[in-house]
Image (cartoon, rainbow, N blue to C red; front, side, top):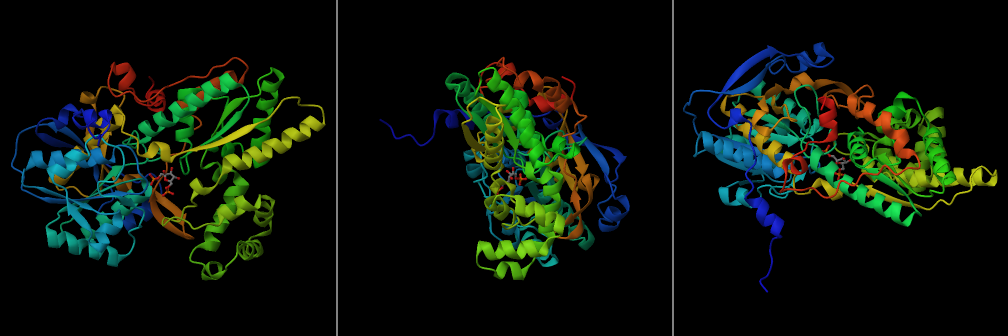
Length: 551
Ligand code: FBP
């Protein structure tokens, strides 16, 4: 038998031609829209970004052919992997070549650090073709280095000058695009001719606004997790003996968890933003779960599914306060770093926190408390993917049920299994939606560059319509910014989009969750992503996007 080096699906996907908006198929002209302002803190943001603040919105239309000079472009993949990253690069490559076949694309290796350390490769047709419609970021790798110091910007400019790079494309989430904006402003101030363009990436779905309807990767990742949740629900409904506590990735916002709930109808789904709005404590969250477990047990149903957002812990007001204090306390804290044992660290932290937060810290199981003091990522965020909230909840729920049993108020059986879905979806083969969307974003970036723009993010909108009707253009990154506390200091950052409790996706969920919790099984089994077949099976965007757009 012939040795297999690629799966049949890999082979088939390599020849899939992503769909483009009609405006990008021919010669493109730019329609300049209204001037913009930042979503908040306008005075501070304007002061920090004098060259890139207030720029107009841009949309593309078909127009006259024109000559485009050959240019050099460098691309960076930044932050966590998200399905479709390779297709952004493919779209960028094809777009640049369609404008001038002599243009060159370089990839910086390992994320933003590649720009600073001058690690790069030229991305040729042979290389790019190998990665068409594939998942992962392995074409050039990714990283989370934060670009925030002048010497880093200067090192970047040095390599751009040396190999003839006119523009840098940063493919990343809110923090990485904040980096991109700062870099764009710095290069504009220096007037060194290097443009910077961002692309909205993150499975978390929290980089979105009026002009960025969704970040890429959210669609595929949610479909992968929903398939797994559906499979678990079939198992739960067959074996009828386990409660499955499923934590889902999404550092902060609960978009992934909510979307998976909309796709699979679990018995319980926690939405962090609601927990915060209702000012719930951890015990309140546990009581809400227990209530449903007891009701189902009363109907002889000692099984079910619970979706838990990764970021939950940061949205419980008392925990949020604790994390904020820990962030300030641990930022650049040499004394803490010098301590050797977990116990020493625990004692140190307990002694430094305010009375109120110290009590919360002490009330947590030691393992969870320790997880809260682990290293922050380079952007100052707690690494919530390392905090095992699902296990914490199982422990607390089991304790509460045991109490109720002792009081004669619960007669069921409680056996729980924990799951964490995150890495299973981050590098999946992009769905048709993500394959098309990312290719269009990359292609859009090539046009923004050829038009001399900087400090813009690629924007492709009208995403619930067929791809030909998508609207491509650019949105100034400063428009998305506000001031937030990071590492103990106020910094300009892109505002995260959290789940809106008055938004249609949450409202739909809230209107149906009681039925999903109840005895009649409402489970939905989404099955695996389909790449070939009828469009209503293969090309559907997320439920979130459809509900947001009134479909
Ligand atoms: P980005 O915001 O960089 O896209 O990353 C998203 C994410 O997948 C989160 O959902 C998760 O908390 C985090 O990355 C985990 O990152 P890492 O694997 O680097 O710890």
